[in-house]
Length: 116
Length: 111
Image 1 (cartoon, chains in turn purple, cyan):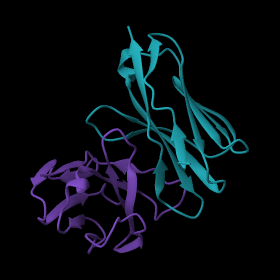
Image 2: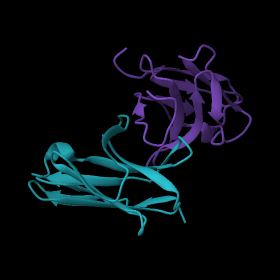
Image 3: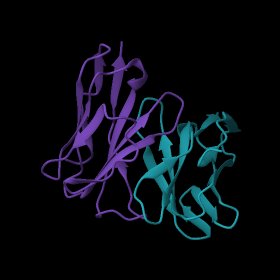
């Protein structure tokens, strides 16, 4: 596709439920990133994939959060036992090169997660 | 101290004026610096990237970097109402790939 796509655009769930958020990066982009943005704040890094492997997962807040990218393209962010504090916009980004500090990251539209 | 700091604003500027946005960062090994624009309810959109000290101009936008002072700025010339948005400063370390963002500066351009 022309840009990064994310589904669903909105997700409302109840506390304790499991959710999956999907990201489809720009075609040919090797690197994929997940960020989380709370209201009034800048995005916060969660995890970065280079190909199929998670190169840096230092931003995942706890073991309820997990992400996969089994074929090196689409990625799924999985959140178990959701809590109200997980409510935020989850942003996915991709970049063309296999990592590098000058790599430009292009963001998707985000998934707004609301945990009731 | 936050890793990347920005004044939250709002920065109110009249149409046609220059908007000046500032960002400071704490990690001296930071190598790449980015300015993203984010409209309300939308995702961040890259405006400028800068990697070396000095100025970089692109249209109405100029980014300025001073690594010794750990400071990066964005100037928006001839500000338009369509420039009203939140501007996010992001920093990338030399050996890493994750972007560390500031909290953003909200800019309001008044006709």
